[in-house]
Length: 126
Image (cartoon, rainbow, N blue to C red; front, top):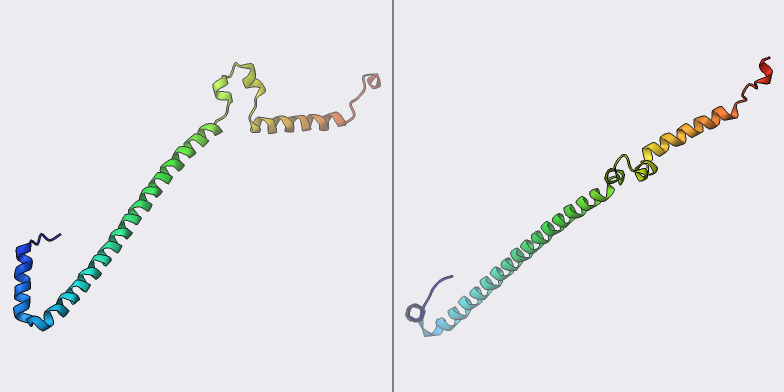
């Protein structure tokens, strides 16, 4: 902050003694000391708040980075497993996606409906 040496303090004390006199100088020194103490506490509080905000901001950035990494990993895990197997693999044919399962169940339901209808017998045609 300010670079005040012993000589400057001595000059201020002598001027204060001459201007204020020996009766009021201790009261003035005490008042100045209280003001300086309040200023230091206020500045210390402001500095602590700034440091806390910086710490919170850093934590938010770290959480955001970790969330992005976790989202990437989750997206990689959600990719279908048939791609690494290849289309010619027997496992790829046995493992099917939910959409194809729905299509297959719909087709089998259609077959069941047609199976429940009576079929003409070959003997009845003659």
